Length: 125
Image (cartoon, rainbow, N blue to C red):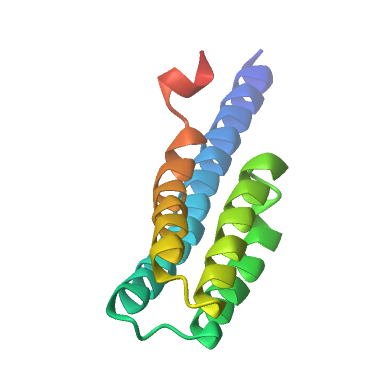
């Protein structure tokens, strides 16, 4: 009886630690993407953005998304990938207004996606 209580408590503690780690990891990864997208947004807004800047942000996203596939569904990752790719295309073509719109979506998605997968009561039920 005592062993089963100890094993159950250990399993609950391990699950809680895994949930806390996952939530922190996802927030950290998306936080870096959001900061990079914000910096690119500011460069586009001032007219200083180059194709290399967009490629740097996309390269960062490529690194992050390879790790995030474990925790986030493919559709959310693909959607952010799509908007970031479109923003890069608009920057390459000198369409700053359109690039700003796409980068705004990227920033908002990077800010809101981690909370959609956090361990919260509204996400469980």
